[in-house]
Image (cartoon, rainbow, N blue to C red; front, side, top):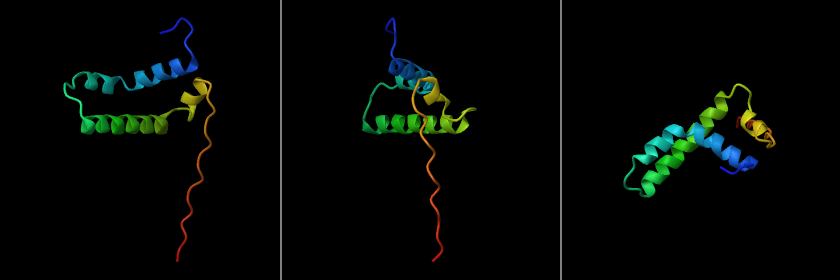
Length: 81
């Protein structure tokens, strides 16, 4: 890590810590192929999604690293025909 890490470096480190279990599993894979990579991408996405839903303060990951907290999307309205 650099002497003065950038906010991207710090964000990467924070995310790596959140994905520590996946990194441990990745170390045990001896033969990588597209299916294995796809499974890890899905697992990482799912982990991030679950983390975002369970944050005590929504948006804290963005806020803590100096990024704008995105606005929530409007729920799609359903219309009856």
